[in-house]
Length: 351
Image (tube, rainbow, N blue to C red; front, top):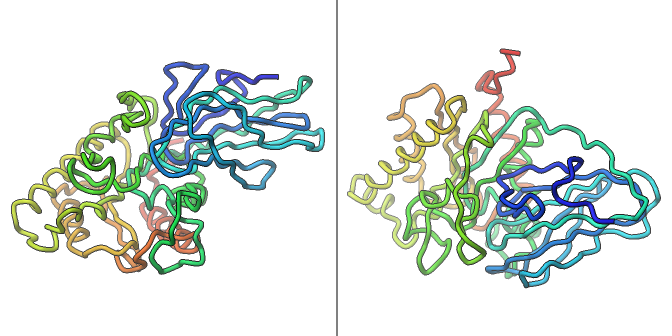
């Protein structure tokens, strides 16, 4: 029996394209679909739109996490998630492990003919969003043998948004999360590592739902659909490619240009999210301290009680590679402690 994507018993979270309610498109890491169902089997009907890496979907079925590989084609295919289950109520959370190295079109679930759907627990009322890069997406997070080391050779199999510091933080804070982040991205176009050789920056992507034209048409995002209480702005590490101008000449024209645009970016988000608190940060991934100095300067120039700058204990010096699960856990602990020190940013005192 097909459970169509517009079934009212399905729950979605993430910046998702619902232009076609029977074929929503999942773009960002951490976007998910949740369903409770009875029966002995469940399958997902998906079309994968590949750009790079080998692509996987993650899922948590009755508390156990796993993944399945996706075929490199844009035609719908039925993927078996589980068979021979006990005929009882099951809980499934199907999520996107990676960023816009691929997008997926979701065409529904297949369950037993006599299956029934149950009510999914409501999403948390707290809302959080992270504008970041690969670290915020959980890229290469499962390569736990490489804690504090450069990345191993891989083809995307170690990347898992569930283990990103951003999603761990959201779970600890009991908050919904949009991971509006992309591996390799910098602030400005023509810098960073995303979408080479014509590199595309966050300035060109933050207001889109689909932003990688290698996977499909670019579309704008309606910010009224999700108004977070907490926004973490967590990029500035890829901005040193192809030139580390902030470290080379902090007071030079290129460095000033970046700080001006970073400030304009934050102030634009403040307009779009008038009730949100903004935490400006980078991560423990190795980078020159001058980028954090620049972010601190911008935070002071904005001079708003809605904007603060946060540094991790190992900020910029923790590892030359991506953040592994234990490191993400530590980052999440530190970020949660900082967020909790900010007071009632969730508006819960007004209830």
